[in-house]
Amino acid sequence: MRIDIISAVPELLSGPLDYSIVGRARKAGHVEVVIHDLRSYTTDKHGKVDDYPYGGGAGLVMTPQPIFDCIQSLQKQRAYDEVIFPTPDAPVIEQQKVNELTLLNNIILLCGHYKGVDQRVRDELVTLEVSIGDYVLSGGELPAMVLVDGIVRLLPGVLGDAESALDDSFQDGLLSPPVYTRPANFRGNTIPEVLTSGNHNEIRKWREQKAIELSKKVRPDLYNKFINKS
Ligand code: ADE
Image (cartoon, rainbow, N blue to C red; front, top):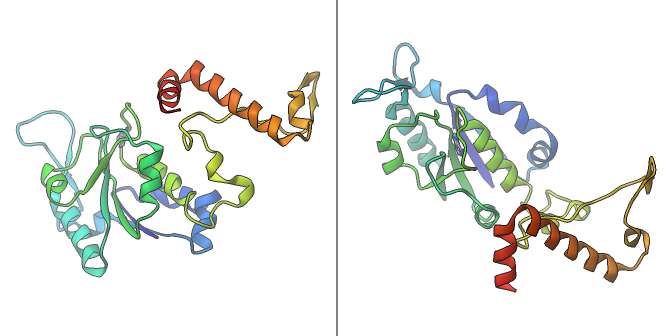
């Protein structure tokens, strides 16, 4: 898979995507992540990539020219399955959609200003708009990194068996049960006995029960969906 990220602040992206699971996946060749500096595509002599909104109002809007030039030059080099624009005024992305994105070959992620990009970019170039939650961030870079992380960790070979993504919260519609590691007794606080029983069937049942209890308590919406499904 190849992910091209377009940003006016590429410095925000370059470090974080070099580390941990995404960094390792890039080094191992499971994914190619290419970051593009939007400013290098502007024809404005002062290097501007945004301007005042027509009709007035606060904040600047990203201009269409550098975005069109950047995306169209990428599209001349290869076919892209989606041009994704993270934005708070879009449907909130859930695990199922992230799973689907892992099946694509080439995607573009366009990072915008929170005040937005010229609507003609959204109408003519963007094929998928997603929000990462009902709150507003100052730019699309963090949401883009959230999407890259969510996708890359699911690519075949990226997580070992021990870290298997199948156990993730949300993959079965419920939150994950609590986990414990050594020591079994930490300052008098002991772990549930079943986990050291060696009885895998009992452990599985305990985990299921805890996942149901936790979801019911903190995410009744997930719990109700799960109960109505099963
Ligand atoms: N850009 C700013 N806030 C965002 C959000 N919540 N989701 C996606 N993109 C954003």
